[in-house]
Length: 222
Ligand SMILES: C[S@@+](CC[C@H](N)C(=O)[O-])C[C@H]1O[C@@H](n2cnc3c(N)ncnc32)[C@H](O)[C@@H]1O
Image 1: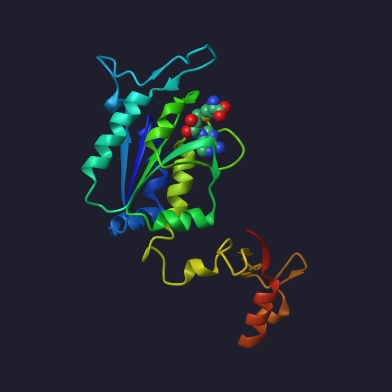
Image 2: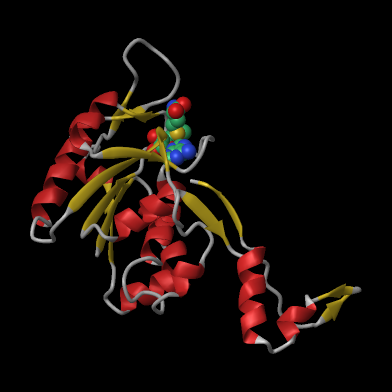
């Protein structure tokens, strides 16, 4: 799988993408992450990427012509990859969740666009597949949302984690549109400040333990 991220701040991705599972997935060639600076497609001597909103208002908007040029070049360069999906980070978009992460993990080439400043010229919507929000709040730019989405997607890419590991995680879909939440878990010490690990988990009775785990899982509607 390839993930291309279009951003004005490529340095923001250095830390999060160089640790743990994301780092290992790249090293094992399971995911190829490409960070592209939108400014490389900027206009004129000063590589302009933004401008003031028509009709007035605070802040600057990313220009649609600059982004369209970037999208076209990236799409063309990668057209041998297979399925492509272009996603704009946008607080007005549909909310990201685990089933969306699962869906993206099966796309061959995911292109994430990070807005910044006041946002992006509305006409960008003609050149993308969908807008995604990470929740009902505003972040300074699309970089942190893109990092969150990339992380959630990569752990679901085939062979990144051991088979079956993510099936047990919270938010994996069950039948009847229900979402499963993982049961409580414990490790040493057995007693901490008079709080005991449930005795059944120490019983060694595998069948009873599995039953307890099942009964302790909460669910909620998808
Ligand atoms: C400061 S925000 C712009 C907010 C916009 N003026 C508004 O009121 O909806 C700049 C950029 O951050 C990103 N962003 C902010 N909040 C987000 C969220 N909840 N989910 C996804 N992206 C977000 C988007 O790319 C957005 O274009």
